[in-house]
Every structure is written in C-alpha cells, then in structure tokens.
Amino acid sequence: MERELRLLSATAIEDRLQDGVPETIADLKLAGIKIWVATSDKLETAIAIGRSTNLIAEESNILIIHNSDRPVQQQMIQAVEEFFPDSGILDEHGLVTCAPKSPSTESSSSFPMRRLSMGVRDIVGDDNGDRPGGFVLVIDGAALDHALSDDDHKALLLRLATQCEGVVCCRVSPLQKVFVVRMVKDGLGVMTLAIGDGANNVSMIQAADVGVGIGGEEGLQAVNSSDYAIAQFQFLKKLLLVHGHWSYARNGIMIVNFFYKNIVCIGVLWWFQMYCGWSSAYAFEYTYLLFWNSFWMIAPVLGIGLFDRIVDADVLMAFPELYRYGRERTWFSMKSFFIYMLDRVVQVRCIFPQVVSAP
Image (cartoon, rainbow, N blue to C red; front, side, top):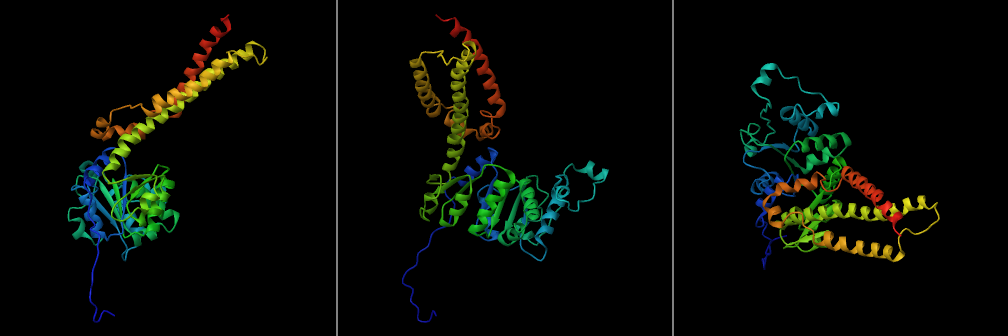
C-alpha cells in the first residue's frame, strides 16, 4: 500500500510533563490525598512517569500485577503474603493465609519484607522490597480486566491498593478508567476526583464525584465535560488546598448558622404558644420577623459564605498538611451539629422569659 508514497507533511503532539507536576503531586501526598494514575502507556513508560512525577519515590517499593502465565489472583495473594501479612486481607476474603511468624523472625524485624519477583526485576531493581519507603501498586489493563471480573477479585485488589501509597494503572482503556473510579468510590465510600486533559478521559471525569478538566493541546473535550477547568495541572494544588479548604469551612459554618437562625426564631414562638394556650398569637411584631428572615439570610451569606477565610491562602499553600481538617470533618460533623443545636436551645430558653416580661 505504501509503494511510491510521498509524505507531504506530518503533525504530532509532544507528550511531556507540564511545569510543576512533581511538586504538585508531592504536596497532594502531604495533604493525605491518595493518587491513582490511569494511563494508556505501557508498563515501563508508566513507571518512568510515576518516578518523574514523584508518585514513585526513590525509596518506594513497586508491586507489579501484570498479565502473565501466573493468574492475577495468585499474584495479588502473593503480594499480600509477602508485604502485608498482618493486614488481615486474606482472612477477610477467606483465602489461605501465610504461616505465623516465629519469635526469632519477629524479634529481627517488626515488618518483614522479602523480594517479590514477577519477572520484571530489571524494571523495579534488585533491592525491591527491601527499601525503606512505602509501596506503589502498578497494574496493567489485562490484569485489571481479571481483577474486575468478579466482586471477590475486585475487593482483594481494592484492599491491596489501600495498603499502598499510590496506584498506577497502565495500558487501560477509557472504560477501564470508569470502572476504577467506580470501584474506589463505591468500595471505599469516599469522595473521588478525576482529572484529565483529553477526550479519552471524559467518561472518567463524569464518573467521579468531582471532575476537573485541563485545557491544552488535546482540545477542550475534557474541559467541557468537567465541573472545574484549569489551564495547567499545577493549579490543582490551589484548587484543592485553598479553594476547597475555604469552601468546606464556609459551607460547614453556614449550615449550622442557618439552623441557628431558624431555631432561635421558631423556638421562641414554640415556647410562646405553650404559654398563651396555642392561640396563634405572635410573640414578635411581624415586621421584626420579616427583618429577621431577610437580614439574617443575606448577612451570613455575604459575610461568611463569600468573604470568610479560615486561613490565608499563602499559609495553606505552604503547609499542605492543613488539608486534614477537611478530611477529618472538623467544621461540620454530627457531633458539632448537636453541640450547636443544644447551645441554640439554651439560648432560646434564655430569650423566652424576656419576651414574656416585655410590655
């Protein structure tokens, strides 16, 4: 078909990392955010990308699950037995557990790690498993198909992945990216965020709770299908650690504030109706009720919902660890909600005698 073919022109897109990607991923890891990378690149390229983006550190141990002669389930079981014997994963799934450790073994090492060879020793290095860093799971698309084939394999993969600091899925299709997002979201019951820059990431972005699109050389398909659009990957740090931090704090405070407003007003009326024999009499002049609902609906939204900043942006950018207050539900939880409600009831009980004794 290519006989007497004359090439007139050729176009290509340079596939390289944007500025600030390694620093952004490092800060997101400090913030306690688990990062999963889903790429269509081959295994060696995916590991190289993980190293260049700081997802795989120099001292990290790499667990590779790939399509080979050995079954995928057997590879995952061996990884658990070798590196996470005390995690209880095998007991939970009713699989054969490893033999108990002898006292001499426990005294020599509190966390025994042995080398695990999956036929890719030249990629991960000879000292893989003996490094002081954490673990990173790398799984290819063919093995992911087997792992997602039934619920038992899926649960085993998910538990193994949660023991690792990061996960790299290579040679995956757009549909597999959706399955990975749903597995994490439904299996762990957590909030998921998906970010991508191409049309092959649209389905993954839409499957996550929050979708972020990057506008770049590959078009605007991801941007048009996302909840938030950014120009570069490095802006994800400010989006999460600053604006996400502020948004959570504002919403948490605003929710209890609105409950406070309604309970203080309606609570006094409720006590007054008991006092006057449920005669439907007003405890306050109706103009004051209108002012209460109008002013206290606008002022908190402007003062707290728009302008309140718990911490300055420079501090949040410099200390990613502060993001844990959002993950730990510091500003809004059922405990804090009931504490606020109890405080409002006490205030209503103090206000009501003043309303009754007023001329």
